[in-house]
Image (tube, rainbow, N blue to C red):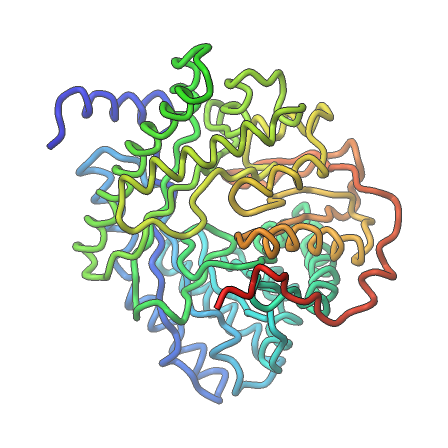
Length: 452
């Protein structure tokens, strides 16, 4: 039962602390759309997505009105596209991206995820075709998101795929240079990718999922920041308890919305992802939570410890609030999407090396980081390899979404608008990693993978 104090507190969180449901994402299986005719395949995919998700946006809007809870995004994720394009010609794969984009436009959703391939153990011909098509696909669409899983703790790291993704990211940046290389903001490289993530750009509908499913992502950095401020100068045990209680309340709201959407759409409820996903809006920053704990600026010494405590407390509080927690679930640190991170990077307090250390204890990884446009593809591959190694060794999801902004250098910035925000160009090491990346092959799975 809810009491009047709970209701008033939630209203205050929504009005004053940027509490929202970040996304309702419908996962849709496309396995029954397979055809060896690219036009037929594209038509089947468009028809199925628009049929299954026909009422997604309206349902989200109705729930917003009913409960007064902002639902920022309505999205769709689909079966990794390389799994349904094996029978068509490689030069037609990009047409499937365009079909996804048309479906997203018809539905009125902001992003559709699943232009993806899982290549941690090696690549098929279909995987190769999809990966090669990514630059053109992201340059010729506006709502399609792409992800490639290049490693798992069980399989190790596919370094051939890592090397290739460095080149693909560079090509994507060049083809979308007129828009500050925005194509790269819709492309992410993973280790240990989850099948039920509702957040873009990494969302896809895994093969272990039902025909359709509803996954919800909640977000409340502003709420947690206010709770930390109100806690004052308490010790860390008490502070962790405060964050846990706050995460519980945020996740309960997500659970409510997820179940309501599931019932109205007659689609199974999957998971609530309890990630703290920031935005460029003032008061909606993970960096500001960390600074509220006593750090003068995010990125200074102590930042990793503060983030580790925050991430753990958020997970503990969220798990108590829902029986079905999944996706990524933790604190996100996307540089361009967090006002505090933007400020810290711009003044030099936050470096890419410090960000990499922080990713060992939080969700995802090196996210929405802009780097000089002349960065070699091998350096981008090496950045991916470093970050993916953290995920593989620690049996956690990590990822890289890096933007080599064409024509930009350190001191410049890129601006994407909306939730994607803006980012200062971050400095990278000038020393080469080319020989290392050229070795190719696979980095073997770590010893901790042998758990059977």
